[in-house]
Length: 502
Image (cartoon, rainbow, N blue to C red; front, side, top):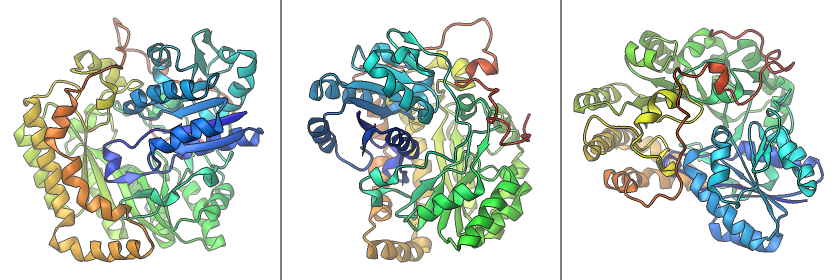
C-alpha cells in the first residue's frame, strides 16, 4: 500500500527556539515499511504546503496518516485531510499521536467524513494492523482504532522500544532540525513514559505511568547511525535510573562516539544521579532543560511536582559545577498580577540560566483539564499552544500579554546582549560556515514572533473547530480512568523495575 505520513506545521514556540525531527512519525514509517508498504513522509515544519500538494497528486497515496502530538495542529490536519480526499479519491485518512488520542471521537465527528479513523496510543503497534484492515473495511476492529463504525479494543503498548528504528532516511531537509545553538540536531529516544504524575502533564496518563528503557547496546547502535553532530535526547525525564544512564554511556565510550547532547530531566534526578550526568558531560552533554515550573513551594504543590524549591536551586548549582548550560521553564499562572511578573523578571536576571515561560493550559488527558476546563474562555484549538491564555486572566487580557512579552523580552535581551554577543557570534560563524542558518534566524525573530498585539489578535480569528468539554461529573475521575493504554502487560513495567515516585 502507498502510505503518505505527514507532520503538520511548526507552532509559535518552534518558530524560534527549536524544530525537532518527528521521531515518532519516523518510527511509524519504519514499522509500515518493514511490513512491505511503500512509505513517504512530508514534514511541514521544514517543507512547504505546495510540496505536499504535489506529493498528493503524484504519489496518489492509498492511505494518509497525520501526526497530532499538539492540539493546535488539529484544524490544519482536518484541512489536509479534506485536500487529500479531493486529490487522491479513495485515500484512507487517519490521525494519530499524543493529543488526538484523548479526543478521538470528537475530532472524527468534526472532520465530517474527511477522516476515516483515529489511531489512539503508540503508533508503531497500530499502523500495520490498521493498514491490513483497510481493504476489508475492518478498521474499527483494530486495537486502539476509533472509526464512525465503532472502536476496537484498547491500544497495545510496545513491549520493547528498541525497534523499529526511526526511518531517518525518509526525511528531507534534515539540516532544518535544531534546538538552540545545536544546529543541525537529530533526536533519539532512550526511554519512554514517566513515573511521575504532575497535574498539568498528560505524558503519564498517555503511558499509564509506565516506564520502558532501550537496551544500552541498541541505543548506542542507533546513535552510531546518526550523522548529525548534535543530538537531542527526547526522554520526558532523562537518566531516572543511574544504571541505564551508565550502561548507555559505556556503550558510547566503547564505540568512541562523541556528539553534543541536549536533554530534559528533573532537579531531583540530577541531584540523585549526579555521577551519571558528570560522565555524560565527558561524552558531550552541554545543555539541559529543567522544568522547575514554579519558584515557590505553593506553586510546586499546585502542579504536584513532588519536589522542593531548595532541590531546584541545588540542581542549578550542580549543573553549573558540571559545566552544563541550563534552560529553566516556569509556568505562568493566568492569575498573576504585575508584581508576580516583576518577581519573575527579577529572578531571571539574577541567574545565569535561560528562563523560558509557558502559560498554564488545561489539556485533555491532564488532571487540570477536569478541574480548570469549565473556566475556558476559548476552545479554539489553535490557542492551545502554551503561549496563549485560554482561561480567565487576573489582568485584562491585553495587559496580561504585554506583561508576558515584556518578561520574555527582558530574558531574551539578557542572552543576546553585549556580554553574550561574542560567544553567540562564534557559534553563529561556525554554523554559517557549515551552511546552517537556523540559529542565526532565531536570534533576530523574537520581536516578530513574541508580540502582544499578535497574541491578542489571535483570539479574534474566526473559529471553525473547537475542543470538546469533558463530561460533567460529580467527582474528579480516578487516575486510571485517564490512561490511554491498559497497564499490566508483561514488559511495560518489568523493564523499568520499581519507580521512585508513588
